[in-house]
Length: 150
Image (cartoon, rainbow, N blue to C red):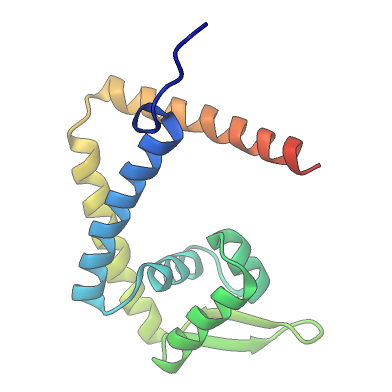
């Protein structure tokens, strides 16, 4: 029988620690340079990539519940970064305002700069292996999630 791994050796824990470190450094930079939280950055980025989106769809893509996303959207709306448009039924479709698009462009440029810096420490083979591994792990995680919830 194999000796159980300690928490610091578990893949999920190690990935969580790396992801948190990357997110914390991003949050610090985005707060300082653009005065946005990490949740606000993700919301702006999702809308910058694909809009308009309803609050429900935006929450799903961001991995937040509707109440959390509603609070983020309210803050961005108060700052004039969003446009709201009536959609089907009682839904509201959200997109970036002109000011929001300007902030988004600065944020996405900074995010790409950070991404390049992280990838620079990897060889081409390591990048390919990382992409492949993340794809495989993501598919397995989704399959296990649906298996365990159904």
